[in-house]
Amino acid sequence: MKHSVEVRNFLRHHFRHFNAAAVVDAAEGYCKHIEQGGRMLLAMAGAMSTAEIGVSLAEMIRAGKVHAISCTGANLEEDLFNLVAHDHYRRIPHWRDLTPAQEQELLDAHLNRVTDTCIPEGEAIRRLESVLLEEWQRADQCGERLFPHQFLYRLIRSGKLEQFYQIDPKDSWMVAAAERNLPIFVPGWEDSTTGNIFTSYCLKGILKNPHTVRSGVEYMMELASWYERESKSTPWGFFQIGGGIAGDFPICVVPMLRQDMEREEVPLWAYFCQISDSTTSYGSYSGATPNEKITWEKLGSDTPKFMVESDATIVAPLIFAYVLSEAPPKRERSPLRNRRIRPAVRSTSLVLN
Image (cartoon, rainbow, N blue to C red; front, top):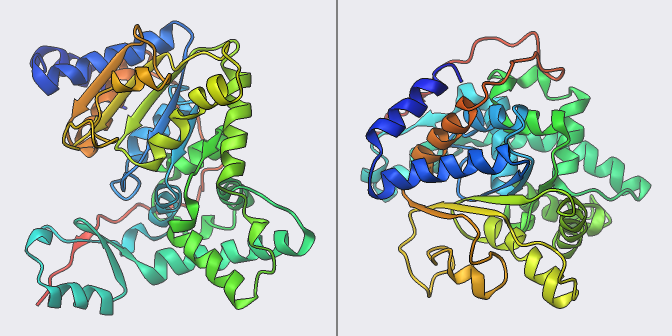
């Protein structure tokens, strides 16, 4: 990030109290954790990929500031939707004022709205589906089984998507993750768009084995093996964007190992930060304070804990810029970067009658 140092100095000078101060505290805690040899798992909920978090997250991955990711199936696929169909997206500034009839117009135009941004079905969803089906069928026929993110890694590395690239792949966090072979865990993939599509092919009989795509319990087993192995020599932090399954799933691996597997030597998470606009409440997991996680043996009483109650689309890039400013990375040309990329066209607003 070109202006990371300026962002860091700005935050330190202006963000002094309340949620603003929590942003700086969380960022400084993140830096300290990494400087002391720790690594970071990012748990990402919401529609952060459609919010183009890849612009900052991809650089965090390449700079070695994010070392594993847990995310929803939507975030996994929507980064690639944006990669191959960015020019066809439509932004609607007045989205709060849309009538049911105008929402129907969007449906009729095959535009799937996420707040103020519409994902084009044909250019994004069906374009990815066509090449992904080939990978599913090949695996289905030979009895191969892969996790959802592994199928997408294979697609990225094959170069089959490059002809469709409409943004610079340096701004795709999935491309960056594929370069690093980053561990990714995707709980509840079945409720994503590509998860629904896969299910439909199984119901139609086009795909014979619904277990061709591994998920659910197998992801938890993979996560448990990974965490037990990785945490032996390295303390792991937990940076959570939003709530829900993307955060609940990975953070539970520690009490599962310590209590259900009776491996009490497995360390707790060594850092925790959550960015959430959920109302603070002990009846809402997403809005629970970090201290509640102590009783569930996910965090310790001395674990650095931060809660930023704000919009993650605003806060996360600021924290990432702050972290990157501590040790500006050397930009290397991505081996997966498409040299024939044309300049991205700014998304235009859709005017509805």
